[in-house]
Each structure stands twice: as structure tokens, then as C-alpha cells.
Length: 155
Image 1 (tube, rainbow, N blue to C red):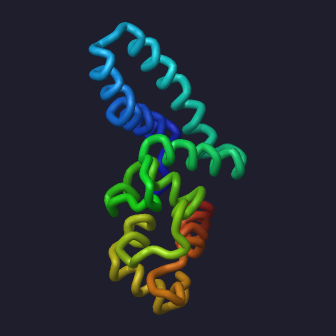
Image 2 (cartoon, rainbow, N blue to C red):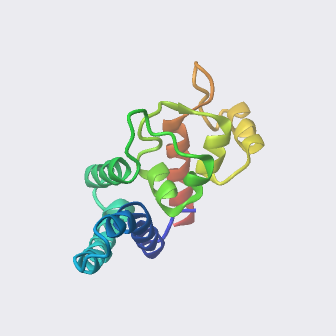
């Protein structure tokens, strides 16, 4: 199910606190400048969540890419654990972008993105409801399309 604006906002705030602000606070030995940064992040997270959940597609994709590259830096492609896809940010990314760095995903990842089991994904692929990728797995675009169709039916 798609995350609400509030769920995504709170999730972004927690992620930024844990991944960026807490380490920075340790590095600067609790300097007073961190408190105002937390207030700025709280305000900005609301705006980012609005853009990601209901903003213009291009702006939403840009916000997603900026958030992922900042919160999950690395030299290799973005490859989050399966549980990440069940988080509010993971669900928002699945709906807006699919997978930001892959053309296909495993049945397990597709299941996490869709909120179903790996067997459920297998059944959908077998019934041509999800597109199999020629190199294996499931096409990310078909997972995203399915999420968007489900959102339209529920909404």
C-alpha cells in the first residue's frame, strides 16, 4: 500500500536523523548548530514527502534520486535489502521510480515492492500479469505499472 504523506515525512526525518544528523552531532561533539538543523530537516521533509507522494513526476523522481544518493551513498549500484522496499520510502520509490538502478529485480524483491510473497510474484509472471526479464527476474517497469494500477483501483 502507498505510504501516506505523514508516514513518508516521519520516515524521512528518522532516516536523516540516524544516517546524517546523529553522526554529525557526534563529530562536532554536540555543537549547538545541530538543533536548528533538525528543525530545518523537519520542515524540508514535509516538502520532500509532498513532492514524492503527489508532486509532478519529474520533480518526484529528482527528489527520490537526491534522497537515495544522500542517504545511501556508495560506489556501486543501489541495492537495498528486501525489507527496505517495505518501508515508506521504499514503497514511494517503487511507485515513482520502480528500482532506481536496475532494469529487473528478483522475485523476492518484486514481492517486497508489491507487498506479496515470492510465490505470488511467480503466479503473476506465469499469468502474464508481470513481465519476466530476458536475463531473469521481473522487469521493474512492470512492477511499477502494477503498483500504479492498484493505486488507481483503490483510490
